[in-house]
Length: 479
Image 1 (cartoon, rainbow, N blue to C red):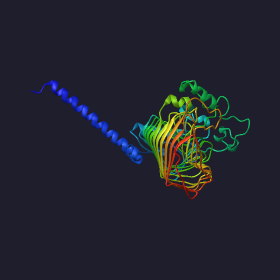
Image 2 (image 1 turned 135 degrees about the vertical axis):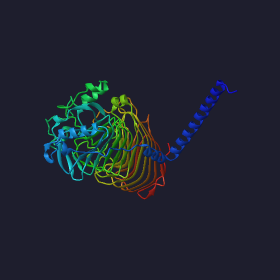
Image 3 (image 1 turned 30 degrees about the vertical axis):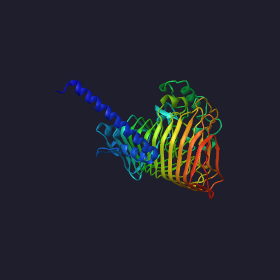
Image 4 (image 1 turned 90 degrees about the vertical axis):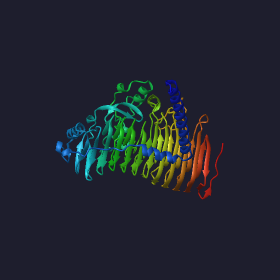
């Protein structure tokens, strides 16, 4: 006779067996990923869902848009997007022509699609960009709306081969940075004024609630261009982006983001091409970056604000991209307080006398955070100005960038890298004695010309495997 007690014991035994098998499999997967991290990248790619939209089209001209480059179309875009969202989603079509508008706010299940000869010209009147919950240099605040803003939405896209033109230049937006090279003159207001950026950072250090960090008009903190804030399942494909006020593509606290075939050409101040921040499962592929700052810069918050949010950026994949001008090809930091891990970069071309570094990690003891498991392979590097790999724990752009939050950096792997002119150093790395940089590997790396092989301070375990620099095979450094 089968009793209830017998069945309960059998169920418990089965559960124990299942847990054992699950843990065993997990250990095997983990071991496989450690042995070949690129298999882990493939699994991440397969796990990322793609956007899907209803076969319905909402032409902005049907909502009053005028393609003369002069008439404001803000209301027409609002109406078209609202109607599309209310009816279950689809494509908001921007036909060929030039369309002036203020900020565009997208909704779930909406694909903003630009025809090949379409160009959206964004207003340079800062008063049109009303307050929203956003971020400036890794610190959350209430500030001018990004030019395209998407907050808390799912299944949303920007597609097509048209142009998004921020119209920023030395006469608007850019002078707010406070540097003469971008149109600012002494005596003019800028982000460096006491009540602007520094005040925001101080508020964050005092844990002032974000809704009370009110900036916007009169504070000269430039808006991001395209920001996906707390979004899931996002696509940006094929568009060209020019003349940005500030950071250009900014997924923040977002998951499952694909940026594919995008061209960024913008040489303004802080014109990073793409800044995933507190974001996970992000693919950046087939893109061209020609920028005034870092081409790709992976972020996770600044100082106290980054520690408050506490979401690391991870599972970031960069494939088949071209980096032209910029401070760095693929960069992590400096706003990196919540940490960065599992970054995969492959099959990219980096080449310009105005590209400072190929791969860069920058942090300091105010930022803290852990950066680990960075994998790079199959790069073709023509010319970089400073070095192939730059890793520093002493990044100090604005001064007073030391604190009590010791950063950690470890496990950086570069494989099959071909460099014609590496600039000053193959590797330039400086860590703390209390927290040395650990485990840098160059495998099958060839640097034809560079001034110095490396400059290392407080770095442990630098492994050179079949690596030739200036025609000589380089031996590993164990310490």
